[in-house]
Image (cartoon, rainbow, N blue to C red):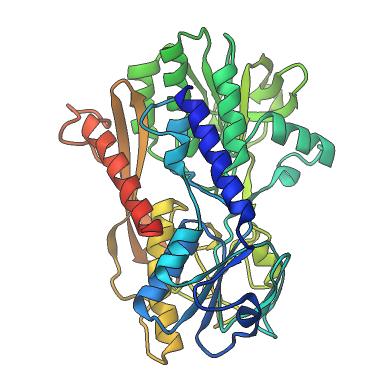
Length: 462
């Protein structure tokens, strides 16, 4: 049996095990008791991703008297960070390495886990309504719901059926789960031909380097398998994207005959039956920004695999909570804290914040720990300075694999600071490593990527 088939059987086994477990797993309370909690030390966390799980563990670590409940609609945790290595066929990252169950850390750290979807949030009554566990009361609510895709705004002429068809045929794979499995299957089964990767066209989106790391990893797969084809990136940023210089240097050195980057494009249509994508290609930044379609070239391109990542918006959970948000639904914050600008008893972490810090796994961990400090202080009637410890050097460290034989990676670090405008801001630096021989990539950075991920998983699950 191949490694890939073993991975799929393992995932199926985890899902089967989860299915026979109760919808509510608690360490010290029944479901009915959870619903009645409002003792002054009850924290409910919506979302069991990087931020939510870090928050749950950190709260219990700091104050064992705090009753913590995590509500998450998925029954399996799958990591988005380093998933591009799995998509690209690197033997160092299997599906098993990316997936975890939610129950073990809940038992170990003494918090409750509820596998359910939130259908309503009543801030006045201080409770949430769920599909399987009924009403759960809180004293402090933490929102860590992640992102949603915004096909509707980006492609206003597409109806719901068209959006569903494109979403399934050209999986975005920016939210972990079935999309990744579908995209992996398409890549593994592709014949000679091209892979189209479409990064989000505009706005904030989850993990800014992700589409470009994926580009390198798919190119690595094509090269490794001897497939006759290219990885074509249809972008809007003209090369000015996260770790842009480092990615482009690596692409040119390692996959110069495979990766084709088009920096000023506009997607018009995707015909999933014919496997054709139609787009405009603009000659330069000025014509693209002015939307001068008379100067653009219309292109119809055949593909074997299409990975179309639409614009992002915040999960609709923030709207459900009726808190102040910006235009894309990201929560407006109370100054430099992670507390909502609308409600002193609601905190927001992870992708859902409007702070000017990159939406990454490491940022989610950093923000969750910082927010946990603020919540513990509030619950215990103590003061907390939201600017304490700022600026925070290397608050975010993000690695991207760019080569598979040997494994070589690039990295960026961010310093987070209290911007005079009243929000947290991040300033990035992309270093050249000592073992890189003057390049941005190195084997040492590739090794550090794996060490960082393993450390992060210990942070969430150990």
